[in-house]
Length: 444
Image 1 (tube, rainbow, N blue to C red):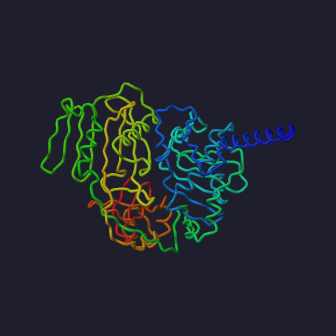
Image 2 (image 1 turned 180 degrees about the vertical axis):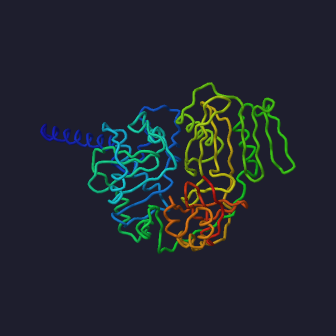
Image 3 (image 1 turned 180 degrees about the horizontal axis):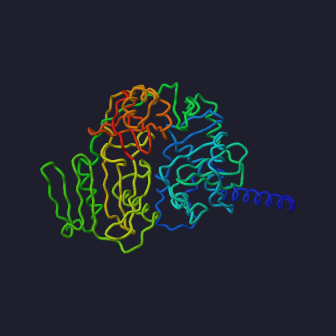
């Protein structure tokens, strides 16, 4: 090989290497998992944090009133969206406050929206394994909006404000472009259909079918004992175990300072009166809760983080960290409590845990059943809602609806029923999507 050809080859190799570094730096390769790279953040953050920090709802708009909700495989959309979000919040731009009107105007264009129950900015950063970002100080993130038409911005809605953050490149998501070529389920806003003041989204003409599921306790065949061993660890040999008449197993340590109760239904209660001396923060509390759940065998990719609430425990600041199970990519809410997994932490220790661990009945032979639409359900239950919301007509009811979501609801017999969650005046009403029957109301 001549010297000139050799020089040319070396230059080509260096050029290709530089391209690879640019792609890795900006996460242009959409389907590679760059989020396992921790970017210098503490190794105490579990990799699984990105599995449960995910949106509860995903909305895709193609412009105007042409839009849809993603009911299955939400992670495919969020995984592509994360590339754009991470570029924005980790960049050198500024966080700008914008008006609500500007935010709503942006929704009219082609875009994708990720909804969260209530997410702190630091948790969003940590789910990308960023040590810090532009959104660290934000509280109560409800929506992240990514415009997909000639815009170099992402938008964030919190409980009180709206923000805009620049991105280095025009936003583009192939998964949204591909969806536009399919026969997707059309949704419409109530204000578009009925001239209401509500922006809640509903499907009008659709054929959706879902199964209901019977469930059994996940803690049979000695799995309850395994949880006790994992919680007490080296203390297990000194634990006092008793069995109650109903079959509940109670484990106590240090004269009741630490207590674990496992019921035959799969309901688990844990209390540890020992308080950590470490100061509490929301990100430490969520990570502590996730590590605890992971340690007792709860897979974080099968649950969704909902929200954290600051509380006082024995005079110390702590946090109540709440999660929901996910079945067929739909959130599970229950009749006993709003969220079926709650972990209370103080500092870096778990103070208490409550949760019900149920599994879908094996060899389920039931079939999918077509659902009633939410408008049909509202029509069936109009008189019930009229008595409780002080309205005179349907438009008055629509004006008070804040959100409509398809979920699974676990009833008192531990059966999972596909249901419509309709949020009215900050209260959740749960309706059986097969029959329109009211299953629960007043959750909030």
